[in-house]
Length: 295
Image 1: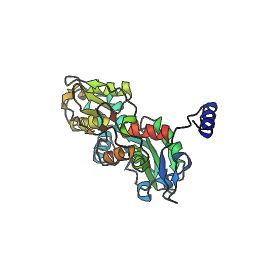
Image 2 (image 1 turned 180 degrees about the vertical axis):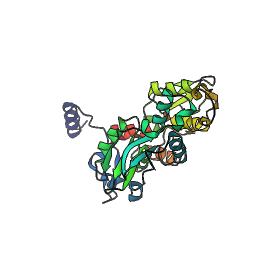
Image 3 (image 1 turned 45 degrees about the vertical axis):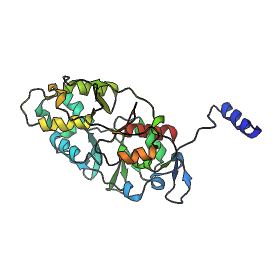
Image 4 (image 1 turned 30 degrees about the horizontal axis):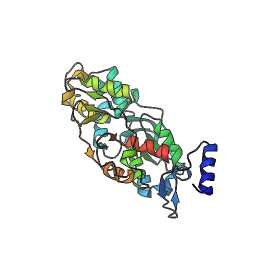
């Protein structure tokens, strides 16, 4: 080790850091230079078109069935609806809120209830000039990573976990699939009930649960899709139906050498984005975690 390298190594130890650690690097859209997320805004990383995706809105007079139907239709764009009253956001609705509400009242009548009873009033409105690292860190701690971007007094855009895939796709790094953290994935059996699957998702605070002995998975959105179909039935307790009726998905199998940029490009257009190596499942939440930790 030469003197300069030795000096840098010792300085890194003194400061409690890792002198060889490299941040994720992106090319600035404003000047073409390499930048890191901690010093840039949305406009430096994301094209204007991706900053201007309008929020998907619903009114406080609508019911849960309408919200469920809308979420199914827009699943390939976002997983969150924004409740608008007098041209301003007052809450958000995702599959999480609907399923949480259904656990408390597990009958088809629940879908006739007003959405204001279950909407999440704890949400954020950000400026499009906000520091991107700050908003990613906040989203990483949220159960439903979503933020509203205010363009002007009555115009709003969305920044959902799907946009983190757009950011990851622009990343210039050799950080690969094999570097993602391995996470324990809970499993369920075909003879479990839908209620069992919901409880496992909640207990593990996970995006997906795996069908036992198979490489297929179920998430909140897939469960909601099925429950919406059952909302017109006369079942006393629709969550007690068999989990075998859920349409589990099989992720795209990828190489461990695939970069984070290539991984994100695969997931961007998927309705239920996820990929899998031989020993780990990678989802948008994992990409968000990497952007928070490494960016």
